[in-house]
Length: 196
Image 1 (tube, rainbow, N blue to C red):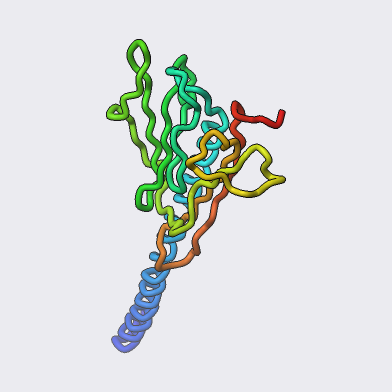
Image 2 (cartoon, helix red, strand yellow):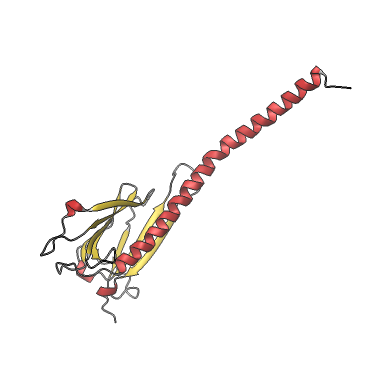
């Protein structure tokens, strides 16, 4: 019965060690890329789902339970309005705002009789992370003649706003690939249409 010589065993161990070290280096190099890609895909998908919710809620903006105008505030990084967020009998105050790199959603339910909206009781959730819009606005506002007239309406002229476009640039890791993804959506406020 013939076995392996000491030299053959040492050579096999040396070659196996080199192959294993090469595999470990390859996996160590690929792991950050895999992690970055996974985080980017997760951030993108979460933002896409939330944009659908935003579109639905903004489309259904309506006067509050106090009779106030459907839009409260319209700025480049914040939009506050009234809508029925949870399909109950009351109309909630909804706030979408970019805070740092997070897009947050705040909901305030009316209380009391007559109804009031106590913003200290607002329930805030983060709906999108890794938003990297930089100096670019999240929200763009247009009048009733959009898209024929693509001039933006000032956020101070809330009574003229009937159409809103929103853009989120998502980048989970700015130092690595994959590159940032820009998500856009547009919505016409159903209850404020004047071009029927």
